[in-house]
Length: 126
Image (cartoon, rainbow, N blue to C red):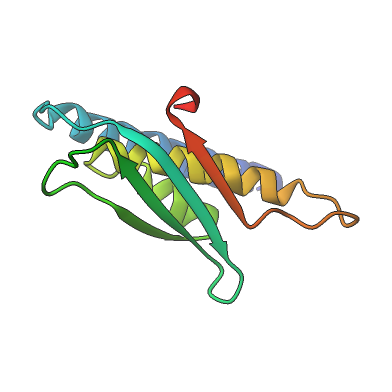
């Protein structure tokens, strides 16, 4: 038995499990009844160095609807950000996209200039 063949089978099986997991998440999201949701006007993403987390605040146009998500906190790990993308609330999924975008921006920062600690996303960037 060639060791490389066994490893490639393991990698292929792991990729196939990820495909099935993503399909399951998508089917669950499609089965959620569509309701009228309030679109955010602005999203503020702040990176907390001490906790290694992103704190997000969602701002809505006034009057703000009752029972909407305003604060979201997510760890700075890629897995936690991806998990947030499968949330049932479409505004939280939108926040997850923007956190991922900001996370990539921070990771590409050079050593000469420090990575930004906050980013504001406006309606035209959604």
